[in-house]
Amino acid sequence: MDAKQASIKKTKSGKERRQIYGDLRELRKEYRERERKCVSNLVGGSKVVLATLHGAGGHQLRNEKFDVVIIDEASQALEAQCWVPLLSANKAVCAGDHLQLPPTIKSSNSKTALKLKDLAEAKPIKGLTLETTLFDRLLALHGPSIKRMLTTQYRMHEKIMRFPSDELYESKLVAADAVKARLLKELEYDVEDSEDTNEPLIFIDTQGGDFPERSEEEDADNPKKGKASLHSDSKSNEMEAALVQQHVAILVEAGVRAEDIAVVTPYNAQLAVLAPLKERFPGIELGSVDGFQGREKEAVIVSLVRSNSEGEVGFLGEKRRLNVAMTRPKRSLTVIGDSETVKRGSSFLKRWMDYLEDNADLRYPDLSSLNTSR
Image: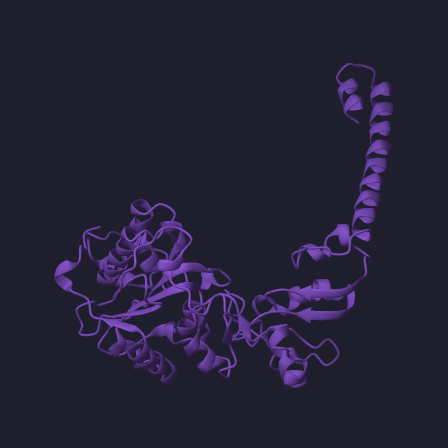
């Protein structure tokens, strides 16, 4: 094909050019056929084939049949996506956690009542929304008989695991022996033994009104802050961000590597306030709770942000979002937030705050020690 392509430039005869183009078409046809056979042989000779949900519908797997299709993170996938690979097998295994965050749906259909129609009767399909995953629907259709819960977890210290286990998993979670008591001070490299590295659960309570939240709209009205960002309804808390920075510095000074630390928060505006951490501590990971699902770190600091006299918590009240936030760490979870505000958000949040107050190393911040300059 390359040789034929090069020869086109050397000939001036129209007849010869047409002949070369004809040869090229035949060669390209043969090339595609050879490629198809190569892929078919590779797939046919493989015991396991990995693909994304969309990729399972690609031409490489067309007409291929499998014994079993396993869909990982099925509770985060749209049902329509799941059907792409499901049509290739008679048996399916859906692996996931329906008590963590569902798929991200940017276009809400709650106002438009989803205009999919039953073609036979031309009536809306009741109860069908993009938020309902195949995972959820199968559980609703068949009940717990099809469910197998993996009760041993291999990530978290037992003290970090206890609240989500009791509240969301019927107290059935068990921490594996290798992880249930491990601490930051026991990392494979040298870390000082201190109150910050020998405690698996720390709660820094900012109650009292000295750590007020801000909205992006308020920042837009402040000439020093500039124009409103894309996250105009998001929240931030600079004083709380200063606490995060202080705690990260303490951990790093104790010997914990920055790449083993993550800071997560439910609000994108707070991520923007925390951005300087990346310059000061190269390797540290900053992320939203939603974006950190499925991830883990040795030490995780959760900035809750919300602090107001009305007790408004916004989407912080979503159990599944908090479940993700509190189950990311291996050895150390530090929660920073205003218990007075948060516990007024829901009964679940109140129980979490009560659990932290009773079981975590409870601390109250010293305002005079904070550096709030950015």
